Amino acid sequence: MGFRCGIIGLPNVGKSTIFNALTAAGAEVANYPFCTIDPNMGILPVPDERLETIARMIAPPKVTPTTMQFVDIAGLVKGASKGEGLGNKFLGNIRDVDAVVHIVRCFDDPNISHVHGAIDPRSDIDIINTELILADLDTVEKRIAKIERLAKVGDKSVRDELDVCRVIQDGLGRGIPARRTVFDPGDKTRIADELHLLTSKRVLYVANVSEALLREGGAYIDEVATIADGEGSESIVICGDIEAEITALPEEERKEFLEDLGLEESGLQKLIRAGYAMLDLITFYTTAGTELRAWTIKTGTKASEASGKIHSDMERGFIKAEVINYSQFTKLKNIAEAREKGLTQIEGRDYEVKDGDIIYYRFKV
Image 1 (cartoon, rainbow, N blue to C red):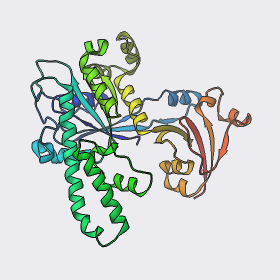
Image 2: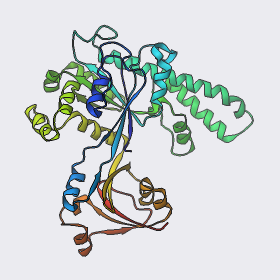
Image 3: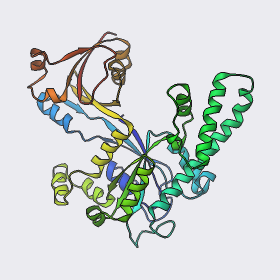
Image 4: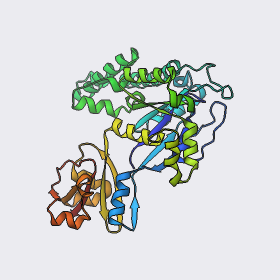
């Protein structure tokens, strides 16, 4: 699995439309709040030109791309942190994702009602962020009440946790999400991570626009970008309707369709690229037996840890990794030529895997 993104936003902002376009999952789409009640999930292969190139060069019987999982979480509303609109249930679904994709409505359409009557990206974002902050504040306050008594007896780990909770509580009370609270590397950072707060998730804002705005830009898009920049998040622009059209086309027609629209890449490609950058992810490749496969890991992952993504036995029995990067490999005919020319490197367990590495693991069970 590459990474798991939760798609959130107010009702009727286009979440399910974009979810369906990205995953072809067939989630219900309708013009009323809470069309989605239980979270819809979709797993999709990550488009990867490097994987396709390697496959053409070595012609393996089986090619397996890395994947992303999207979770379409029901539309949140004002008061969700207090249970409005099944808010507690919906907020709970966010805790299990790696990152949040916040869909913001940036299109006018008289046939699709807005839950608050008018298109206002800043107000919409503020409503969602406020509910996430209030939910986290409740979580932290309950945790503080539980551990204050233990801290008095002198347990250092409990005192550290109490310190962390109070710092986060202070920030949340001033409208600062937990992801913007910085601790020195060490136990306090670990404690903050273990609280699994909603506002600790990295956020990618997606301005869902009409086709006209996709071409021309506008104030709605600028507003979303300004908000994202102000809090150190990223933003991209997607037209959900166009993404739906792309999904309906045969694979071989999609590139021409994008070119006709003057677009260099689809919204899915933009989202994946932004998501990988946001979560500091890279891709490496393996060829084992008859299969060429792509894997997603965090930047800085050691060779032995990366082998554990493939199978735990490989990590336990790790001997060495034979590595060649994609940029070098594509100048050759095959791996045999790379070995003949001495272009593969033998690395140990502490080697940090690089984006685009092709790795041949040696291990013993």
